[in-house]
Length: 205
Picture 1 (spheres, rainbow, N blue to C red):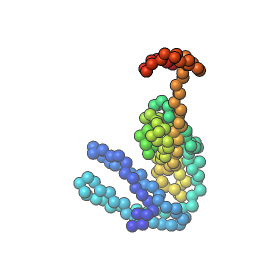
Picture 2: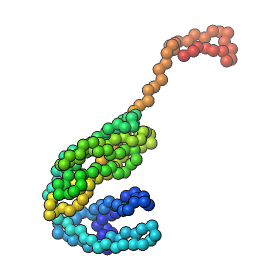
Picture 3: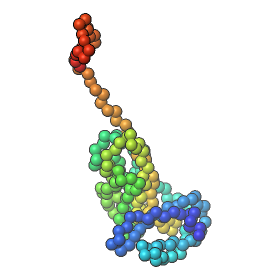
Picture 4: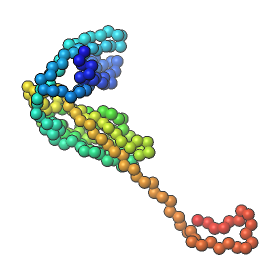
């Protein structure tokens, strides 16, 4: 099928008690307006039963920019390694698809060290905060590349039928130098007695 090299699918966590499961579908190649790809989506459950759904992807020349969908997109985020858990490191704003019944939700994927928490939701947009969830260590990891995804986001009617859009955000861990030791009561010059023997104390610092 064409779908094997046009899109890639990443299943989302799904519990056994859930009545449905979800997956993110990512575009895996550059498209040219007018291209049409027809392929099949195959879903398999834990018992091995499968369901096949025919689908298609049509490339359009829509002109809606990402800045219209996301009025605030963070640049490179720098977080000191001694930042406390719970620190708000940045925020994201996503405009809602007014034709959708649901409000826009913003998600963060890629690391358990950070989480996305909704702060403000209106009929037009959603604002969410990126929050530090686990302690950072510069010596262990210096860079995080995370995916920000917004569901039911603003799209161009007739040109874009996606129910999700997103971008990559980079978080850099800033090294915080440890405080060096401070010496007190240290003599610049120590005079040694002529009768010193092995293991005698010369001075104290």
